[in-house]
Image (spheres, one colour):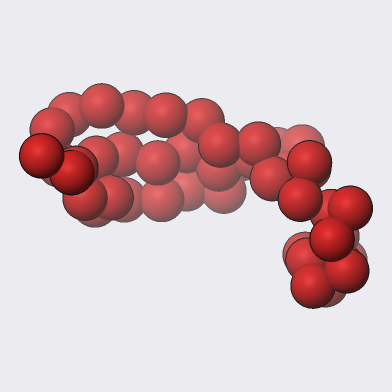
Length: 46
């Protein structure tokens, strides 16, 4: 069965915390995706 994300929180250093409906909490590091130009806007801090 595929779990669904029920909450997402931004963390420091371009990471996000994802909470799933089965109680699991995972940290996702976005930094490796900056090598793709489509994600360049995410690097801009406002």
